Image (tube, rainbow, N blue to C red; front, side, top):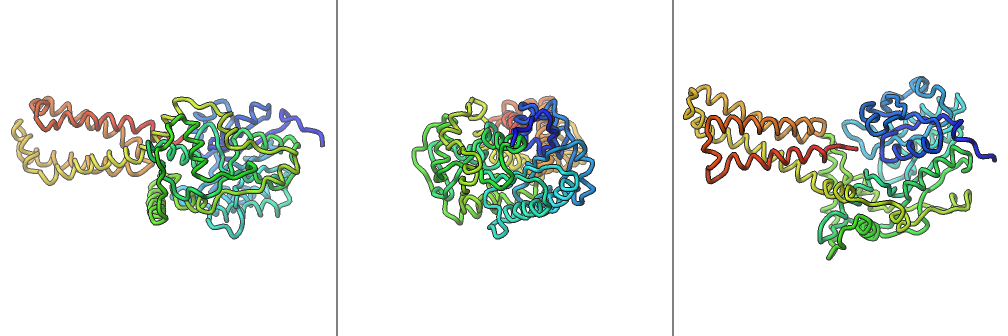
Length: 438
């Protein structure tokens, strides 16, 4: 079969600014394809993929064949990189992985548009997680439509950037001295992002026969070995000893992460990820090798091909520290407000000593204490967290300025009430880059 020219292909990438979607989009663009991205947030997409034409698309709104028609104008191939790990306030797996994809399949079949589906290892109807079961349902809907189709099931994807499983690996590798691990012996097969993107290119170019392929290296590694290789790649010192976390602790952490997901925090420690890790990430490389005569790079070669720089180590450490930073800021501001309310007479006495009337001082202390509590709680809601950090910094500046004018002696107070505001202000600023999701 002659190779198709990618310069003649018009490709729509769904989930174009995601971990896999962004890499696929950039690769196709570099290969000369005419690429458009379908994204949930146009502003974020423009920041991540400058120069790529983008269309706004919310998968939860694309439930019928006709809903897709506008997106599919002048499109030859759709690459579906969209997906979610677990149900939460923003994601419905049945809708994103199955219902919307079934509608896409029908729309593409009607217009003779090909589909490259990025599925997942273990996506089977009887899989252990809702994530994998809904992925399998979407895969089956695509096959049933008769659309020209490639279903690609990557193992644990190792890329230059980090998200999901890759972010979890780097976060674990960033723990100093000790290496904590759940399920250290679970088998894992990886695939490098360059190999995954090259496979997508081969499918669109006609170099890969239609079908279903597991994109995995030949031999599995234990999870502890994968983390060790990740630690070496990042340039962190080897752990002095390892700690295998008991299942009860793993389940407790996963339950906490699941709860936080409803507040917008998409932690890689959620129960779906933990269940997948417990089951292992194992595929069969034989069908791909039989179709192409090639195999995928093993884990050591994947990491050897990826440059590692200071920013990768910094991101790994910031990912590890972010939960503690957010929790500390929340606790600081909530306790500050509660202490203000519980010590109302003493706090208002400072203002009356500066010339305020007792009623005005009381109202001011109660109001400001409630502001502190609200700011401490607001940072726990992911959607508001960035604005809460800026508000915390601004309110702290106001507190310092007002206190310097009314009670400058607090600067030399042995307990340092004003001096202690400074690190809290700085911590709010430190949290801001941590909160950038991509």
